[in-house]
Length: 268
Image (cartoon, rainbow, N blue to C red; front, side, top):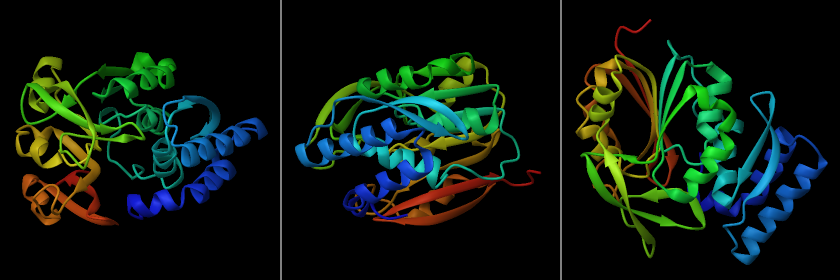
């Protein structure tokens, strides 16, 4: 997977791929072209546009807001970043749920009994609720961040990149104070005895989160992005040390970003 900077340069190519692979009709295709042009050339990023896309073989009305929303659609539904032969698919944790795209993918791909979704950024929460409304019976939503402690944490974000909210400050960004909880606190309060898939995309907070997560052994499969190097202060291989009872692998995505996969040892 290319770095985020290169993806920005290729936004028009990505939009063409989305149109050819996911667009439900001509009107949707035209909307995508116009929205991408407006966002790219006029730096407008907060105007939601309703698209009718074919996601996992089913028509779905989806609202998107920024260019980064299209990158995420591409990663999840074209590249299928979170698709794998998981041993179990019934209980899913979706950390960094963004505008609901990964939840839609899991719901339509695996038909789980429950998806626990976590997203702290208010602008994303609004679109998450709209995009996943018809799946609410299966979704337990938490408008907060999962982190190393219970309490509050500053979240830094760029209004032009809705998928890049982070507890780590990167350049000049807006910030908001959001609620946060430890994974173990959620597991205890929700009386969860197992997690089949634990997906995470939390823009650099993964070292803090997993360093303070004691209940990893109830998770069958972890999959998500890790951000290594200068920004996090850790190297990618160090992340594996948090998963002594899982078999781990890393795939470079460029720019210090890796796709991490871990499966509990002995899992069949």
